[in-house]
Length: 482
Image (tube, rainbow, N blue to C red):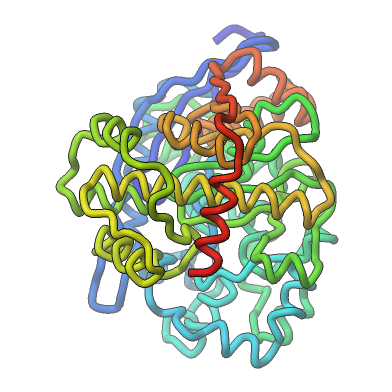
């Protein structure tokens, strides 16, 4: 790489796979290539569902070896989950998976000590049964937590193993339900009332802060020549993905698609009203003082689980058949926690349709069309509700992430929202990761400058809405009645 540019390794860990991408960034250029991709397979053991974090770390090392010479490294991943370290810095067991059943019924125990309305007014975080706060409450009294001296969120844990230095990156910390989104730091009042020891957490880092350099042992194992800097990026993958939304103004909504759909707005301040809480919107922190005001939707997890149950049929053929299936014949609530756990997804979708008095989809194509119509309808509701609750109108919806490969979902989202959809980039989280590293190298400036560079260097697809939104309104009303 010339002196005018830098090569940055983006470690991007999703719920089903991980990847190491290499971004080559110059003053007016941005290229991204895949160095290594590896599976992320949770493991069910007698005590519950766990992440194979050692396997993930091995994949990261393999990816850095495949990446070749790089100037820096950054890590992003999913949110809320964590590893516990003992006094010697050793990991106390594999991290618990957020889909584990240990948090069932825990929220009610938390609300008995701090009512849900007060908790939302203090932290701005939507209710999700797997938030770190509920996980820690579920772990109270366990031998593992009693021995813990440090808690590191997943990307911070891997960064610690790479560098030997501990920190807690802010965008991911904002999903713990222990951060005040107004002050952008810990909420000691919430922690005190709920018996959470904030001393477990390492000092906060912001995106762009230095996070150390690769340890000599890591350099030896990967074949990299040091020093190689590790930079704190938007370590919640959604924060990195939103940073890579190629918007040209402020009047936009975004949908980060993949296993989850995260649909909402980028704001300057949190929305902490009771109406916002009732609508289950969350205020997570983004780059440069921004707030990611969004709703979590179950996302393509529904289709992924069905495809797995059907024996991995050809997805392209399945989507073509789904495009020919009757539109909006049956829809389900794509945000319903009834779909959270793995297994029996086609049957559960059929049961939901039956219970609401709708035709039951039978063939894989019919079930797929039901899922995609339901996701588009959920996207519509989230974009409409976010605008109303935040008083922030939009003219366009940006879809980024893995769902950009699903042209049918993008078109249905444009139809449902009655707004143009701009699709791309697909590897948004990795690109946002790379751009924060590039900014640390002073190759790009503010968030708007990062987005301009993206827009000049990424292939984007535009979908115009078709046919009006009346039938989507009717489907929305039908689902509300069901």
